[in-house]
Amino acid sequence: MDFLAGVVSGLVMGTVFLGVGIYVVFANRDMYDRLSRALPQGISPAVVMLGFVMGMPPLWSLLGGIAGVLFWLIDNSFPNAGLGSSNLIFTIIILCLAALAILVMLIAGRRILRLGLIASISFAGVFGWLMPLLANWR
Image (tube, rainbow, N blue to C red; front, top):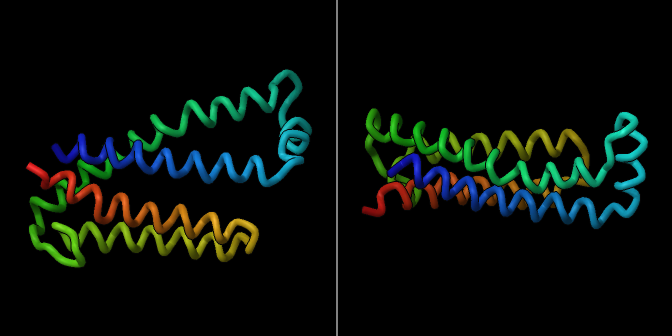
């Protein structure tokens, strides 16, 4: 059940990540031209964008499944609730990962900070609270 909750949460996070990625592409009108200059000859930017759209949901569901297994391991080792979640240790780990991602985006630059905040807060909410609630929904 925990693995399935992780996969579902990963698909939710993949949808959020796709939304942020599509916004980045549409906000930067010259993205297609920059991609065509950076890619090797014969690879179209449309193929790269299609790969992004097709690859993100399975990638996030795989990451979610791994998070579900980790949740199961941590929940069996340290079964204590807290912070609105069924497992305090797992939620703190997820919050630390989200804070680390925000820190990296602060270092990277202010252009992606707003979108990074949206993605990081969504990550913390989906994996820190939604996934444990789905895993314990029996």
